[in-house]
Length: 238
Image 1: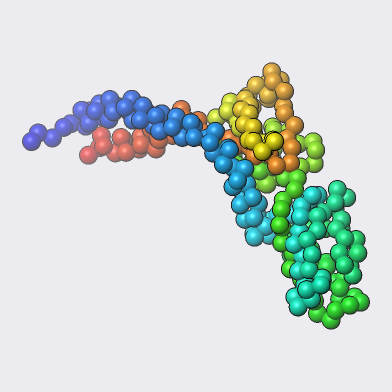
Image 2 (image 1 turned 90 degrees about the vertical axis):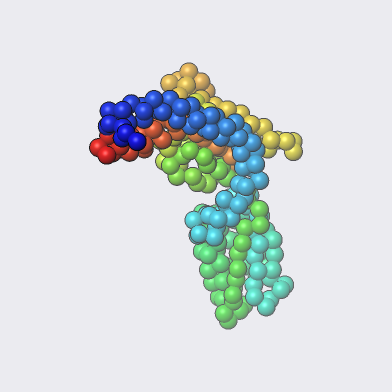
């Protein structure tokens, strides 16, 4: 069999690129079609992300969070309490205690310290998040998916900026905000390019909102072609 010359091999690769791009685009479009469903399911998975943040020690207690407080072998001191708007909780024997902004580990140490002052010799306290309150979850094609506190002033563009901005594969014209309302999920799509250009209003986010940045089909295709170009050059040298 006659071996193809380097020029022929390069031409064949170049002819294959449109097909590759087409296939990549179809795959990306399929992925994009599923983002709307992902934003809906994100409301269910949002608490999982928050639980992971808690497990990693990154989550800080906020207003309206519901805490499960347990004191080892002192069942009467076990309680479920909600953090007030002022960041305080009220516990038996401990009284009013400021916990907003603290990790669960820090909250455990604060409560144990107060119990140790007058009542128990070496209390073992555990604090866990039973239900999350005012938090905004940002995921999808952002550089640093994260959970943000809801201070009542966070807009969509600020939430994206606080998550490190968009990734290289993001489509800034399609950013979902999923919000639970009347036991239904409301999914709105925003164009960040228009917002940043002053052509559209920057929406104010609320606690419980899930922000999902879509992936750009075009950018995915171009990246895959770019990743293959070194192999094309290599093929011409063989």
